[in-house]
Structures are given as structure tokens and as C-alpha cells.
Length: 58
Image 1 (cartoon, helix red, strand yellow):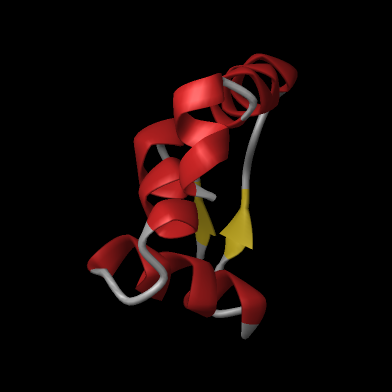
Image 2 (cartoon, rainbow, N blue to C red; image 1 turned 135 degrees about the vertical axis):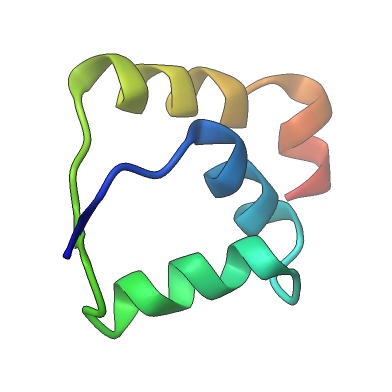
């Protein structure tokens, strides 16, 4: 199965490693699906994760 994961899910998974979005990350790590992404999605994720408010929570 190929999946595009929304940026909000990744951010939630990083901030709360025991929540439902973290299960998506765990499924990716165990290769339960193939991740589809794009440069704009990766740029958005990088920008969000480096915001001071988010970086403090990580």
C-alpha cells in the first residue's frame, strides 16, 4: 500500500509518541506501507519542526 501522510500527522507523532499518529510512524518503520512524499511536503514539515514553539516541545 502507498500512503501520503499529512504534515499534521507527522508533527503530532513527533510531539506525542504514544498517540494515534505515532502508530502511523510505527507502521512506516515496520514497512506496513510505502511512503509517498514530495519536496513541498518535506519543506513544510522541516519548516514546522524548526519553529521555536515546536522545537521547544521536541
